[in-house]
Length: 205
Image 1: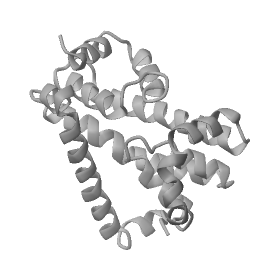
Image 2 (image 1 turned 90 degrees about the horizontal axis):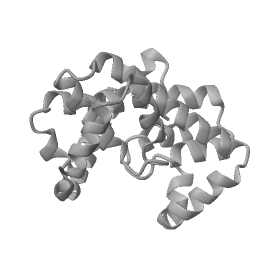
Image 3 (image 1 turned 90 degrees about the vertical axis):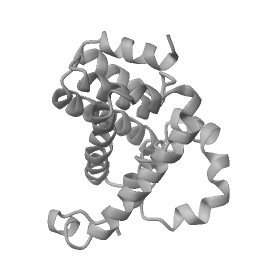
Image 4 (image 1 turned 180 degrees about the horizontal axis):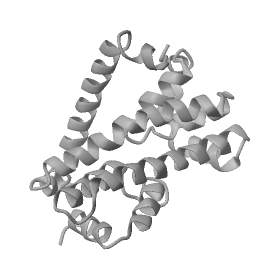
């Protein structure tokens, strides 16, 4: 049994409460990328093991709480968030400091949610910059409403091939495909900005 199959089997044996906990802890305490968890949950939804319509709000709430905790820790100067930032992100971003500083906090909150290994950046910078909690939740939730259904939907739709999609030996190729899909999504979002987002009060400027 491969590691991927083990993940799917373990998730399939959990209650909805257990799935909430795994979603909350993935990428931080549990060393499993969120994409793998979401694709696996989509697979389980496609095979009827879990109800996809119940899973989506469960996962969104878990990830929202996770991000909110990181935001609050950062906002109040937590040593833990500073340590995590220094250990995992500082070196990667030190050459892009001016670039990051010139990007609005709203855009960082929204777009970092789609970037593997950089999701910590949105809550951290929002908190450290003193970005209002209400606005942070608003933009973060908006990103999650796209991100979570996207990956669960992919696993659901392609459940007969999801083991190949998330197979360990193909991870590099699939990271590229995920990034490509994110770029396409961003392009669609940007193109729809004037006609749709302003009508619902979302401003990414």
